[in-house]
Length: 357
Ligand code: NAD
Ligand code: UFG
Image 1: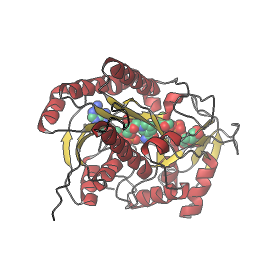
Image 2 (image 1 turned 135 degrees about the vertical axis):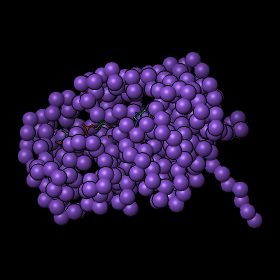
Image 3 (image 1 turned 30 degrees about the horizontal axis):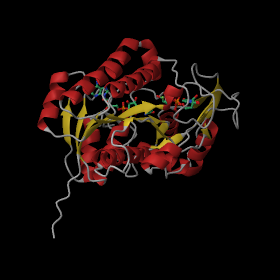
Image 4 (image 1 turned 45 degrees about the horizontal axis):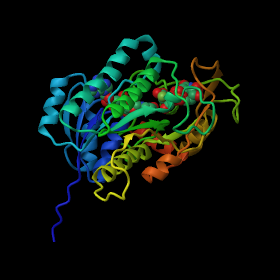
């Protein structure tokens, strides 16, 4: 008997990027069909080529900007989407301080443009890349989704502003189903070593910096502060493997499908509304613990020095991951050692990232 099984089609904005490319693989494995829409401002076509090779099928890719409403309309008029996973955005905190208008334009206006086109085509299911940065300096740990929100830089403000816009949208029209996923610290790479994080210039974030020291591209890691009130004085974060994170998006989509397709009145309420969910492991790891784990797993020495704290950094940040577990049935599976192993495999196989060295 042949089963005609076709899952819903998803528009993936920013799908050529770090988290988006991993999510495309998870979507394919879960049986979803997808179209990737990306302006390649912080990614390369090569990532899409490699994902296509990994899944054994060409991904439909449209090069375009989310602020180009006509181009978006064309995509929406040629496909029937169940929903959108919206990764497209700029993400460098320091750059956002130097170029706030760029960040608000790209991340906030771009999202408004996308939402307007979604409304035109009556596509009202959205999974949005939010961030733990919306919690600012948390009062309590672990951080749950009801914690107060505040931001200190334009990047964080752009995420928080989009969250407020999504809340207002649901208030105006309860048929929207909007899930902002608040990521903690995504690291790692696909276990194939074919796709991973490929920062432009010198990395700002810890894990890519460590791996570039390990591969010999950078001389030494600076650890920003060893006088925080933490286990060893260095900052504590909730590092989460990008493969687990990708799976979290599939679980969020599954949830949206279940909620929006239920015909049984005694089932869950139909509209999801605005439903923020943390994606983290629930465990904090210090900077020094991560450096030591990397050395232990890879056998590479990571020379480091302690320097002053980095402006704007907080001491500790880790998630309460209960809501994701209860509502989505999702929890992170991979360990800090897996994160180090897969980062190193990607970095050592691709010392120049997607660029030909
Ligand atoms: P990334 O830069 O690798 O991916 C973002 C993608 O969006 C890139 O491919 C870029 O070319 C594309 N893009 C940017 N602006 C666009 C526009 N106007 N139109 C079309 N495409 C555009 O970043 P990532 O790490 O994969 O992050 C994905 C999302 O998750 C971002 O919104 C980011 O802010 C958010 N996020 C990331 C982290 C993290 O640490 N990586 C943490 C929390 C939240
Ligand atoms: N760190 C160093 N040396 C470095 C880089 C980082 O010691 O070279 C330390 C930082 O001081 C911090 C920890 O490593 O204690 C993690 O820093 P990252 O820059 O890797 O990550 P952040 O927690 O500062 O921020 C990241 C993303 C933000 C996102 C946030 C929450 O960069 O965009 O996680 O998801 F909002």
